[in-house]
Length: 186
Image (cartoon, rainbow, N blue to C red; front, top):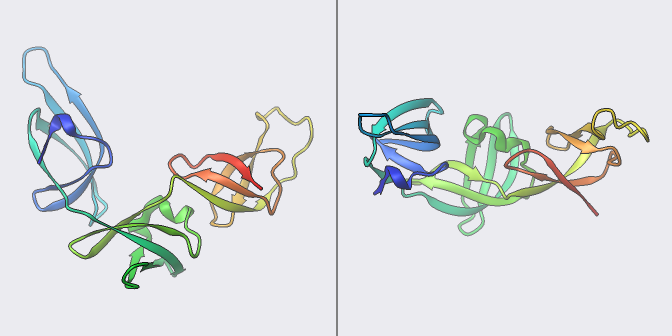
């Protein structure tokens, strides 16, 4: 059990039997009344986002999630197939459960799968991934009116802003938390 003072973004809690992730929280202290906490929660089973208010000092139950090392195998019509590297059991997650993670998934990529009561909930991506540029305009020397960047489409379909010297076929490192270009990989 944790209290409102221990809340952090990304925590997974059990509230009224629902498995929810804390997206945002804000401690509010009003002049005469008692303090309260405004929570923005996403239900991990339905995907619904709700905002709720609780008294400061309320207690919450942490969800007992299990972490498994998995390998992404392939996607088939919006169904993404993963294999547990220890038990060789296969899991299937749909596009809605993965959210923005689908923009970073490459075949044979190793990542963490979070499960609750044996049911696959979501994947945790590494902080950075290396992706190949498949489409971008050629950089024109001296064209820095736009800050010296241009859009590039990567092998997963993700579009990021890259420096002018990046060409088709280059492999770049992308931050999965922000979706931004970090560096070119040699």
